[in-house]
Length: 359
Image 1 (cartoon, rainbow, N blue to C red):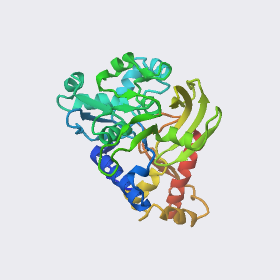
Image 2: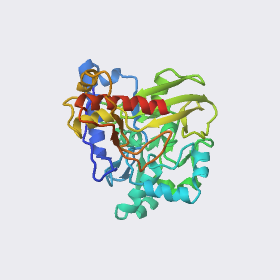
Image 3: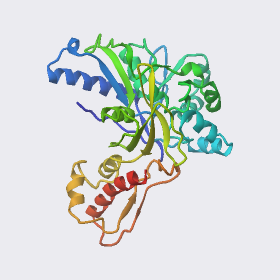
Image 4: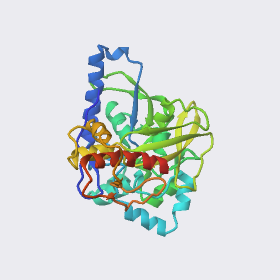
């Protein structure tokens, strides 16, 4: 089962979700799956949670209510904060600890933005009243009635706050980004017992696994051995390579990250992130009005033999790997009087392939 929810774009380069929409749609799709399969909750072995990773939610520990809409992984509002840290020479330190680069893609600067822009939030966070989580943690919290505040290493490793060698939250990184450690969830193996659901329709079901979407896909594509890689095409496109038991720090614009934790052992990965993949088709539909349904793009693009010289750069959320330019914006080149809707659609699909080829 699948259900879309509203995307919010309050300013150019900003993107938000309502955390309550995320929760409601996920609970509804889970219940629908059980109903359509004719399965009782007691027949299910476990729930697994996977999520778009860096999206940032902060909520009140007492009420469970978010203090602000979720800041989505594609959001670019903290580009200047990242640029300031780069100018201060902090990127090498951050990369060595986290495997990541200083980019608004990741959670830490989003958390700091929320604490500094929501009235009273920073003081409440320092007093232990607020909780941070990526979407997996938000869903787990509410599935368990607020009993469990936890995540796994594949998600923790995307926050800029987690030392991927020591496999723990870093006080130094928390201090650098201005994030109180009291906000952070417990980190446990990706495949482990996270707690039991208490919500109607799912009550008593154990949550037995959590993994960020791209690491989950690496595992799901059976890339269990060092050297095996996958690429997935979703909202963005992501190439991940299993690097075994040792983290790899890239000098070529890739990310070192945790693949998963199982049985007390950690598997690492190297990642190339393309921010706009299938989202370019969503934009053709919703933002540009070029097609009515996402599935219409294939026939339209196939109606011409090539793009007619049109090149689209879908840098709507900046450029990810290997360029890492958060200030880049989308552009189209090679337009002529002979350019048609079909040429533009074909250029959009080709843009997905070109970006993956760059990685």
